[in-house]
Amino acid sequence: MTKILDRRSVLPVLALWMVILCALMTLHFVLIQFRLTGINHTVTYSPVVVQHADAVFTHIPIVRKLISGLPAFGDQFVNTMNTYQITAWPRLPYYVLALIGWPIANRLDALPIVATVLLTPLNAAIVYQLVRRITGSVAVGVLGTSAALTLREVFVLQPWHWTNIEQLEKLFVNPFFSNALVHPQISFAFCCIVLFCLYKLVCNTDSTTYVINGILYGISFYTYFYLWTFLTVVYGVIALYLLQRRDYITLASLAKAAGLALIISSFYWIDVMRFSSQPGFADFQDRFSLGRQPNLTERVVNLRPHLITILGLVLVTTRRSVNYVYLFVLTVTAELMWKLPIVIGRDYQSLHYAYHFYGPLAGITLVVGLHDLLLRLPYIFKGSLHRVFYVIAGLLISTMTIYRAVEYSNEHYTNFVIHSDVQAAYEFVRDSVSPGSVLLAADPEVNMRVRNIAPVYVYVPSGYGTFVTTEEMLLRYSEMLRFFDITADQMLEYQWDDVVSSSSHDAGLLKSQQYIFNGSLRYPTNNLRSEAIVQSYSSLKNESLTYGADIVWIGPYENSIGGPSMKEREGLILMYENESVQLYLFPTHTVHD
Image 1: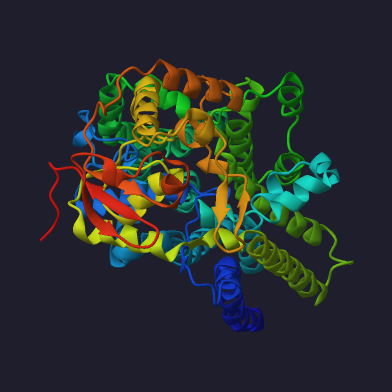
Image 2 (image 1 turned 180 degrees about the vertical axis):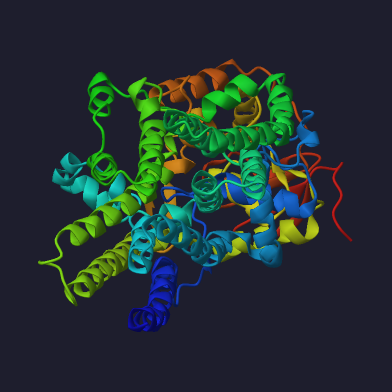
């Protein structure tokens, strides 16, 4: 009875710790605000030049279209294909993001922090239930959850990585993936729910359990590719394990769940068949890659199993518990999915992102292993020493989280501002331009960001997730350059203008080679990408726009390197102007009353 009371008395403390941990994971957003106090510019939570700016690059524009009731899939291109039949793809994550983003429709740039604040506690609760069910320990559940959510990238590193000081420094000035990349939060939360239900099926099968598993597994096909492929392999390995144990009753329930999932996933396969018939499908697949072909040394190195995976194997062989077997299957499957593209020499992004699963599972495995070690050494770690260990581990996790938030804020805070005149022009487009209009701009940042602010399309498609052919992208890009009297060389030399420090930096995703091609394997190097841009520009014979445009954007970038003033162009009507931005209307376009 005393132990039960003690455990209950500790629960409020553990709950408070989880709240503090979730707050620390959003600390960098708060610190950035303090660093930008007094700066006469508009603050944004979604930069386009910092690493992992996927929210601006893809997610928010799609969410903006969903909220506005426009075709959202392939948001980066002018909608000329039959993809209007698909609202968004993959469906589930964007529906969740649209639900979260609807109350902040006029400030979708804040979607990463809003999603983090809402989804991190949800992830913590789900992971805690999974770990506690496997280990039977409240303390291990809390500590394992803490490690899984805050140090996921750390657990991906191998021992020999820790000798590379530059790599470690880079790790601690990058944002948390669960913050900057919104979709891993949704995918990981959904994955943990499935894994929790699958664990219940393995341990205690009944009709309700296998139906729930089948429904959840089927829905996973409407999330990201690496999630349902990971779950498919997990289901297969669990099936082999049950077959080896001759547990045919549970195996039959697992088969029924898989069959139900295949029926539910049928609409997904219909989508795939429909996409495959589109002319831009092959290029879409190419640009969805990481654009990296690992060398032989890296491929051989990644054949070695991670030490934490080996630790999981040790737990399985020494304890022979179905709980540890289950955790080991999850961990080793995630590692195989993460490393397989590297080993075969095609670092394909959709599978590579399985390390979003491996990092948390490795963190859980490490904590479970340490807990198992404490149980094996009762004479050394007895009494209050267990609690001291947990407190020290908690302090270490919180210290590393705070340090990372501070370093990231100090390094990148200047990237979180927009010139106030530019922001005012964005808001004019949002409030006065008809939804679905096509905007023509030369500035890559405007090309990306205006779609976050307003439900409009852009003339020049961006590479990531763009469902058009590469030739069409290059054609529109070259036509845009000719329209503004900008040469290809001028655009290739682009550098991002830091409005806070009034200095220029490497443009990152804003480089033409990046935002046109992004992760292309067909054009894996910047030199090949630059050559393709120059060749397309040089071979362009048509001086006019092939596709329709409604609005012409003239901002600081266009004014600095563009050709003659738009006022000298016939057929363009000035519709908005401030000190930095002018917007011109093609005669065929209409604005709101």
